[in-house]
Length: 534
Image (cartoon, rainbow, N blue to C red; front, side, top):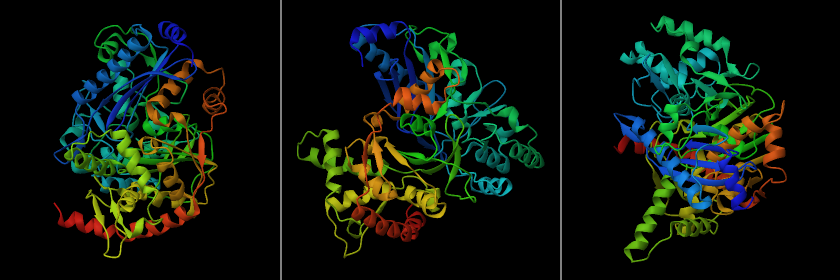
């Protein structure tokens, strides 16, 4: 990274790129220099809410968070480099994939945003999976649309456009109804040859929906699909005011295609090449493996999505990862504060996570489920976090923390076993990123044990998706003619940086296999809790 005067000159001449990502609990803006180094950032915490049985965020939530994260990033620029941010080289928006945002002809939201977290689309997902012979997960936009049609919901007749959260924000700031292919692959199946919606399935859906009284052509209401590197519009005057309340930011900045958090995770971990993979672990967790060929059959546990440049990817997505784990760390903080101890949360996380490494390989017989919401991979429709043990279990702090870290990857383990053990998919490298990996060596060693594969973590792992989105914005404006995303990342962003790799500890891997069997056998306990605990 250059000195502050050099960076200041880059900022003032617009030789930067800005990535903003809407995660489940945090919205973050990351500004990078022309060498792709993060030079300023700002974030905003937010929480989804359960509204009439639907997990959602309001439009006000979205724009308050957007402006606040941008404002803090711009303030960081002013504080660090003594200059006012007025322009950037390119901007990109990313967000939680899937979900459902439906609008009428006037651009009004017809029903509250239905996030990826909602598992209310079972009949639709099952019917479409059978029709397409292609796995349609509960959270995909097309499942939400067809379920609304099946339900006879009043708003369906007024639908003019449906999109995802990243597509919505991009639309509001540019006027363009487009979507990156990675995020689009969570709306409707993508044909990897055309890098567009699957034409055969579009026709099948149109015929099916018409029989149910829905006469709009699906292609007319979906966003246009773009691949990484394509220009996706410019920041309008209205968009600049939406983003920057101070009025300092100028219109006309080019934007790249909006993407999903899976795609930005692949970019941030240099995992867009075939036989590479990455695991993003935070509030939710997903594993992505770039495939060499189609899978032999349909697996309900595996989503078929794409890289930002359209390569086929098997995605294992679990709704729950660290939420319950974080809640327990919060309990320990309260305990410490009750004794008058001023607790540094980073130190507390580090201490408790490292304590888990002292536990028995199989967590001493403990079992926990961090299901704050339902988990489709294991067939649990709603969440009931719980901890279970037998009188013979070795119940201590190390095993307690170890069990919660193990279970945060439990559902992912189920899906990854299908890829590796059933489909014999070869994975050369897996990179971890997200909050689970911030404590050095802990989440990394547990993931390596869970998938019995070497796992690398880069210094940029904490930057995650927003940095990955900034890389995609940089690629759009800096790539050479014909330069692929894979080559750009490998040669210009990650050259010589493969991260710090950790091989699975055989004892830990064997212990995780024992825990995984206990985890699968214990699912009826979770279902009983759901039935008996309101």
